[in-house]
Amino acid sequence: MTLIKSISGIRGTIGGKVGEGLSPLDVVKFSSAYGQWAKHRHQGRLKIVVGRDARISGDMVKNLVIGSLQGLGIDVINIGLATTPTTEIAVTEGKAHGGIILTASHNPKQWNALKLLNENGEFLTAADGAEVLKIAEDESFQFAEVDDLGTVTEKDNYTDLHVEHVLNLKMVDVEAIKKANFTVAIDCVNSVGGIAIPALLNKLGVKNTLELYCEPNGHFPHNPEPLPENLTEISQLIKDKKADVGFVVDPDVDRLAIINEDGSMFGEEYTLVAVADYLLSNKVGNTVSNLSSSRALADVTHSFGGKYEPAAVGEVNVVAKMKETNAVIGGEGNGGVIYPESHYGRDSLVGIGLFLSHLAKSGMKCSELRAKYPEYHISKNKIELTAGIDVDGILKSIEEKYKNENINTIDGLKIDFPEKWVQLRKSNTEPIIRIYAEAQSMDEASQLAQTIIEDIKALI
Image (cartoon, rainbow, N blue to C red; front, side, top):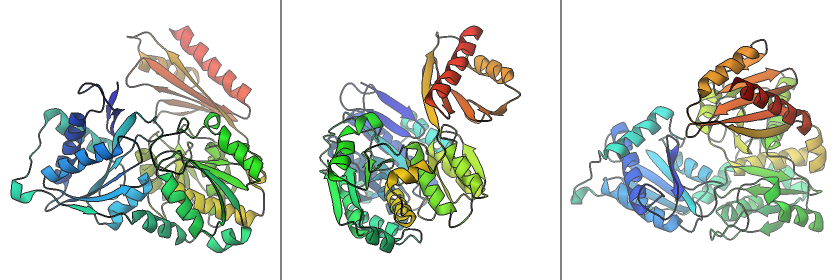
């Protein structure tokens, strides 16, 4: 059993002893800590949005979260089954003081989590997250008297509002998509994407949709992380039915994977790249992604005369850098698209609307569009170290060895070479250094990673 307490939320497996998994007592404790944090932040009667993905444990966790907030005297807007971006939008549309999303993202079905939002529908900063954890640790809750308990309002129309929100975006060309007469295959892993994605495609004028696993029952038919090894079934469906494109989302619909008409992978790293290409071809601007994302975004941005900026890993860090640089698009290389014209959160519905507009206007096949972009490959590795080894000292020594290259230390150590890069990040919970390398071939990326691993071993 596992319970992970971090500044970005509380995640754990269902079952087991208190503090070892995400038990009902843990859910109440951390929901109450978040509610108390919100009460410190805002005056008067508070309103919090609660939405959840379709996990089997979702209904149980939802009831505990809502009851805890009511006990603090906070009014709850329960939007039921909803994507993460839908819940984010509901916070601002509903003029709420925050939100809690009940989802463990791409984790298997035995996991669940509380993702915490501020009044802007954005994830908490590191400082705010730390305050929530401190309140939980101290159990410094102040519950309401019986006459002041919170109320619950049920609202199940936010998915429809989210879809309309996407349709109203200036760069989503509904007429072009209709005219293209696409056949689109989707895999929604039996979670809330099965509600939102078909509704979106219908409104976009897609008449031919091939649906895989769109029943939101929480029984994931395969590993729910949208990686190539988990997408063989939809890949075959696309080839058999001659679909134009395939879309796969994770259980909370903030990651978007695209599959070409020939069943090959467009590549999660290239979801953001393609959307940025479409937007920048219409309006030059700045872009942001985290340091572990592909260099292809920087290449595309520079080709249009824009400026690319890297951010530390984590959506909250990407959003902060986007605001700082006034970026027109940003996100993460795991298929996370953040489009400020919509809202500051990863949103697969927005990604689909923009990508289909791009595909329709390009007149290309999906695989032809993918072939436009620089070819890069990322090798992901880790090296396990003996407990007690000075990991920071190792990173400092590697930095010194490669000091003549372009060095970035905002998140571990990233070394940029002219046509490749390598990033080293230490784990906060175990003696491990994660080593990601990118180059124009997988062999070259793997060789670069191995060179750094040998450097580390020599230092040890």
